[in-house]
Image (cartoon, rainbow, N blue to C red; front, top):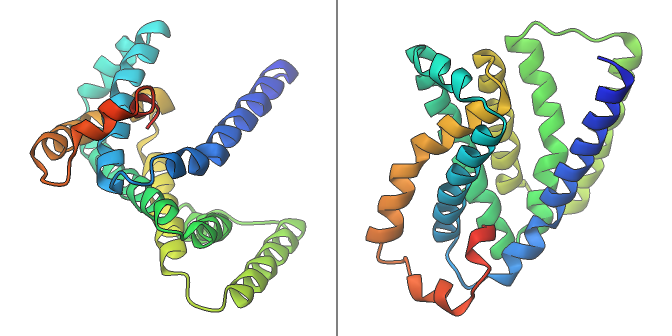
Amino acid sequence: MDAKQTRLGIILALAAYFIWGIAPAYFKLIYYVPADEILTHRVIWSFFFMVALISVSRQWPQVKKLLKTPRKIFLLALSAVLVGGNWLLFIWAVNNHHMLEASLGYFINPLVNILLGMIFLGERFRRLQWLAVILAFCGVLVQLWTFGSLPIIGLGLAFSFAFYGLVRKKIAVDAQTGMLVETLWLLPVAAIWLFASPTARPAIWARTPGRSICC
């Protein structure tokens, strides 16, 4: 990987974390909408966004190749369930005043990633890396002590996202193609839930133009 690719990777990572960081503020703007309904919109619009992205990047040959491997398709169904559950829990936490606990979950997540990497991927660390892990673990312990109780929501977010990453690592498919198939798996459920669920209220989105597409 050359220096230009490294810089681009850093810029894209910072942009992704910035968008992810301000997402709770957006969800707070639509706090009156049930979390499951927000999730259905997020899935549906994510699917169409991925279709557009795949088209622009001309990655349809990769999609066709992936569709010929049933094992990967079914593993992506599992990863779709994991990421969908993670999205739902995060949205619910933000809209029900559990933002601190949700944030704590993503401090715990790297430690869970390390554990899964050692167990399932055979990863090992050098001494300095172990020092970093120990310092991170101590930092999380301090946060847990300050929090004062077992962060059930935080643990749910940490483990669901960690297992999602593990499954995606095992599948070995590029990010765009994988996300397209994941949202395709979730799309029928989201569409049925949106139009059939008694909690779905389309009128809400009519009163808030411009917000639903950002879910």
